Picture (tube, rainbow, N blue to C red):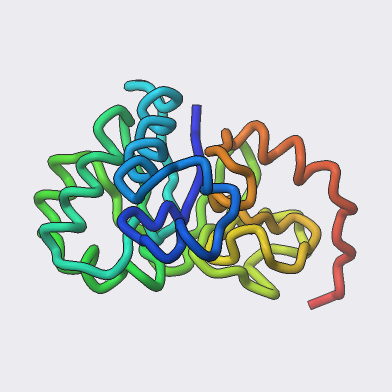
Length: 186
């Protein structure tokens, strides 16, 4: 099974206190960090894949990036990680061998994949017009924490948008209900 999420913002005190009321049940940042990682560990098994679309943590050192990534990926068979605006500098400094040893694939800012005949475009940021969108490609993104504009076949998969991590199957059931896009002839 494939699980998809983003924007945990581990260690981000202001996010917990001011910006995300759906995180208010956690008394402090440490409880939030542990709660979010616990959800991943309870759902994502050794045969599962995790797609994480950025902002696992707030800006920090390469060592902090490795610490949080190690905690995130320990139960997954493989993790595709697309860096976000808050963690990209630290994540890009991690030694490629460390990533390989921890079964982490570092994706491009705009990452395209094809699964069961469906093109999927992954990015931390929402894209207005993404590759193959007129042919039914999905676009999964984070960054907006559930506060962005909805478009057909585009979905904010951030933790705050759903209060949980999602499976690709759940996402498919939602996106396949969207109106098909019309081809514009280009």
